[in-house]
View 1 (cartoon, rainbow, N blue to C red):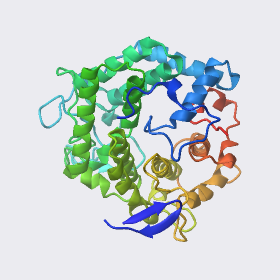
View 2 (view 1 turned 90 degrees about the vertical axis):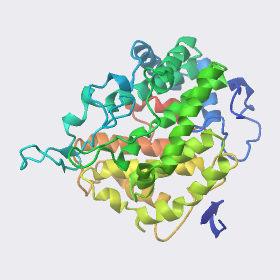
View 3 (view 1 turned 180 degrees about the vertical axis):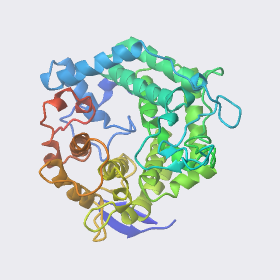
View 4 (view 1 turned 90 degrees about the horizontal axis):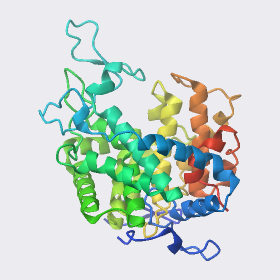
Length: 417
């Protein structure tokens, strides 16, 4: 097993978050502790606390993004709740509480009378896999609104956003009549060949936003113990399914972005439950299982370049690896994936390869279905977010477009000294 500590590679063998109020953090001019605070699993709590203080002091730099966040929260306040019980179809189990989705890039076979089994058309979404027949759209809406409302509560302190967040969480995860079972046994099925596939695990990458919502509510003592315990039980059961089920283990074995985001889910949940040593063990395996097989000496990610949206998937996978490197900087973890260097390829080499394509003058040389300008903007945003996460001034300087003025990520990933 690899152990990456302080940028060196060596061979090795083999809730206290609750009740922390934003005013309890150390002043920013005091010496920083080693490692990033674990108060929030997904974000740098001290950075967000500084942004909140700046907003309270009328700092105009964050004003437009903050206003946009509150407008989005006001809209989300009027929507939902959402539930797996809303879909029109039922999972093959016969239980509507089971999450159901269909593989998005699969279509009826035109050469078969019944169209079965469906065939793959990479990058082309079949509209039959969306809409009211499946849970994916409602799940996405629920997670998006939970993220928006919980962050609006964090930055504004307006209790109505906390109350709505709790309602959404309670209906989707806790209430007996409406809750989702903590598994993805019937995710990304393919009619005629599979009722569910491990590839569906990536559909719950947004669980990081559920983690943040719980932590924010607990931080301000706004999560009743009964609801909080029920949510943690669901998350614990889901983690167990992720680590032990056939579909979960299949996803873990993938060598592309699916395997990367399996690790992101697993590590974020382990850190959420303060299972730091288990999180460290996963992160210690990232060089051997993810970085070395995925990144070439010139920084290309060959598994992603094979796709019909090669830039989109290169960004996606590298964003996942960057999150894992961020988790490695957490207190008590100390696994420095960001500064890991290898002639065979590493995370920073992947950034070096993609950097020229932020400038549209440099044409992307691989296939990219859809709007290339949108993909390039997403690429630029990835560099800015990474600049915040890993204190890289060069990347932070890309945060200059007028459009970014309204980007909520300005609040979540500030480029601070």
